[in-house]
Image (tube, rainbow, N blue to C red; front, side, top):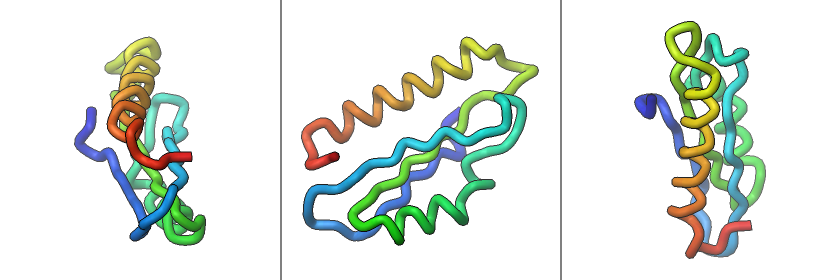
Length: 88
């Protein structure tokens, strides 16, 4: 479920930090959109930082195994995308 995934970043020209955020909710509720206020603050207040927040399929319709797999795949795709950039 990638419909609500968010990438928030400041303007940067040098090496930057990357925060990979997986929202809480016990795999039953919440979305990345519900965490936008503090994620936006992180992106602005932590110098040269990109914040990536993902959504995953929720229980009870989807298993914990699928939720963890979706989160891990999102992480791998993110690493693959930013591997050649100046990421801390």
